[in-house]
Each structure stands twice: as structure tokens, then as C-alpha cells.
Length: 147
Image 1: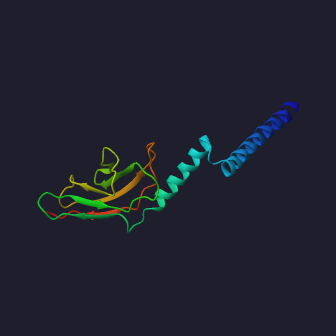
Image 2 (image 1 turned 90 degrees about the horizontal axis):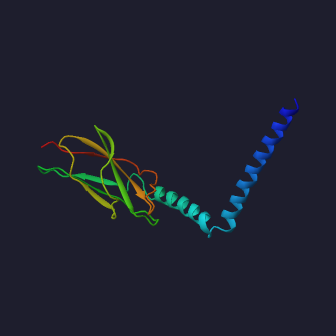
Image 3 (image 1 turned 60 degrees about the vertical axis):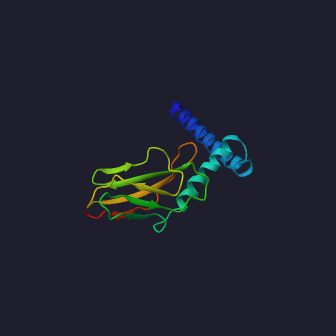
């Protein structure tokens, strides 16, 4: 019985310590957001929030060419945050794949690997200088014409 009381007290002390640590981190973020790791955490949070809010259904557009060799030209509104680039994803019959090898530095991309008569869905993710991706943009549907 005595060991049970001691273990409850230890658990309360540990939980109390975590609560104090979280409160201290919150205080530091609020008053010293310009220092070291706290600044990095605040900047990362701001990057993800701004990158997500910079996309909506109207901002990513896709057009399929009607020539013999098909391609899809995508364009989107650039993020208001500082980003290293964007990753472009395509969902089709083979699932969701990233179609660029390096982050796209502009606000457009041409996918020349599409097949005639297929429907594809595209989305983008902003990429930070450390390689962190934002939440995805809304998807856009593109119907590639048949030959």
C-alpha cells in the first residue's frame, strides 16, 4: 500500500514537472521568440501556416495541350513565406507520386509525361530551405485529350 502511494506521488511530481516545462516554453516563445531554437520553432510554424494559406482551389491551374505529344502546364500563386521551392504531386491510375526531382523555384511547372485520354489530379507543397514541406494545396483535375 505504501509503495502505491509513493508511485502516485512520483507520477504527480513528473506530471507537474512537464506542466512547468510546457509553461516555461510558452513563456519563452512569447517573450524571447528571437533567440535560438525558439526562433526556429516560431519561424517553422509561421512558414507552414503561411504556405498552407497561400493555396486555394482557384490558385493552382492546369491546362492540357491538344497536340500529338501531350503535356500539362500548372501554375499557382507563390507563397507569401520565404520558400526554397515547391514539390509537385500527381495522382493518376498509378497513385500519388512526386513528379519533380528538385524543388521547383518558380510558380509553374510543365508535366510532359502524361498519357493521352487520362485524367490526372495535381497538388503542390511549398518546401522550406531545410526541406520541410507545407500542407498540400487543393487538387486540380486535368483531363488529357485523346489523340
